[in-house]
Amino acid sequence: MRNLWLFIIRNNAFFLFIFFESAALVLLVQNNRYQKASVVNSANQIAGTIYSKADQISRYLMLGKVNDSLAMENARLRGMMENAFYDADTTRVTVNDTTHLQQYTYITAKVVNNTVTYRNNWMTLNRGSADGVQRGMGVIGPHGIAGIIKDVSPHFSTAYSILHKDVRVSVKLDSSDNIGSLVWPGETPLIASLEDVPTHVPVSKGEKVVTTGFSLFPEGTPVGTVVDVKRGGTKSFLEIDVELGTRFQQLRYAYIVVNKFQQEQEQLEEKLEQ
Amino acid sequence: MIRLFILNIVRFFVLVLFQVLFLKNFSLYNLAIPWFYILFILLLPLQISNFLLFVLSFLLGLSVDMFSNSPGMHAAACTVLAFCRILLLRTITPRDGYEMAVEPGIKDMGLRWFLIYSSVLVLVHHLILFNLEVFRLSEFLISSVKAISSAVFTIFLIILSQYLFTGKRNRKNT
Image (tube, rainbow over all chains, first blue to last red; front, side, top):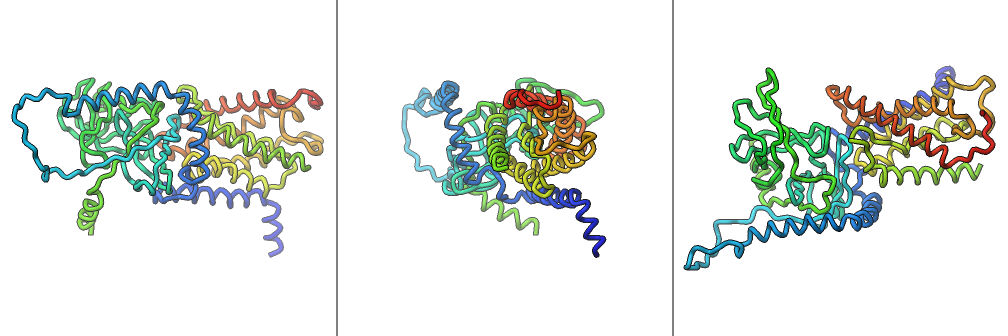
């Protein structure tokens, strides 16, 4: 016993190393495997408050660009309003619409923190459970999809960016309706790649890519445009580069997608697995 | 002694905030990302006890983790760094042992010693960190290349900061 004790004391550096390293790895693995709401994340109050203070400063410096993008979005939305269309019909009928139930609503949020330089990027939004945000909701920016909510605190939430190695979004080609999945290979924050599209599908450069209705985003939400198509040798799938619509370096405002039927759908699908 | 204590506490907070608020947007063509905060571990006094060294390294890693949503990743890399620091200091002890109460910086130890010391430790830390982040064998090569280029960047910043913030007076090993 005494020898064992002496041995441990003589090599204390090694045993301390094992202790602290395993503590760190337990934290790491737990977070990765179960996607648990972990204590150590930037949605907690300290980090959230510091980030929103720092963001107030950088937001001021970005005002010009933000104004431009908001003005452009306003113009686009105005173009979609009823009064922007020439009314060819001379009779007007008031319809009490009972066939269209609203399925998606949106919560506006400020992006108080955002990274683009790492392999796994994430963002912090200034809306939390008090505003109705829940884990797993989609996040879209003015020009396309942006992320998926991971953790929620009362006033902040963190979200995986699309620029994250574990994020996979179900998307389709706008013209041919062929589905595939969007992943980020990690080279530049502008380009993602579209996988699982078979080689017989005709794909042209400049084609729009939008979401399918299978995941968190409403069907047809813009994702980006095809910039390059390669036939990879013996592989049976195309290698497609998609330029993302969302400019992650400039993302300042985002909308969180609330799917009103999500719970109902999940409950129904759970029965399949039993 | 009190002075050393306060100096290190201030350095801890300054480096963590500098890292998470300023350097997070600081990358060269998405190839090199500086992880400058580990300077804190490099500059801890030589006579620090092993236990305190590990506790501080772990806490340092965890506070950076808190800001970057990666619980355990920086803590794991910093713990490895602390262990390597102990092994390295044991290996490259000068012939007469270290002088009393010196800090392992350029001022006390000289450029050559500090360059070897920081390069080895920064490289180890970055290799562990980048591969933990990706956690995939198929991307081992690309993440290692990124780690090495980032390490060069970090070492450059560390040497620069040493010359900026420590006077050249009373340097012993010139």
